[in-house]
Length: 88
Image (cartoon, rainbow, N blue to C red; front, side, top):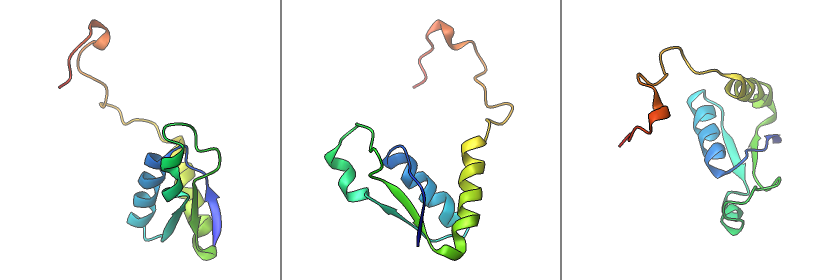
């Protein structure tokens, strides 16, 4: 197994695990059970995504595409949100 990525927090790690699983790549998130000890502080290398050697290149490409993705056109709010719009 190879450590291919260090997520910023547990939420990003879980999101990437789901993304990789949807593409058929088995991954494991190390440090998941220790993340509660640091709370909302940066994990500082505590978390890591691990994948099998044969799937490492594909997983790295998917994560790179995720990190460089831009919002789709049309996802912008319809109104000017500078006026303090309540969303819920």
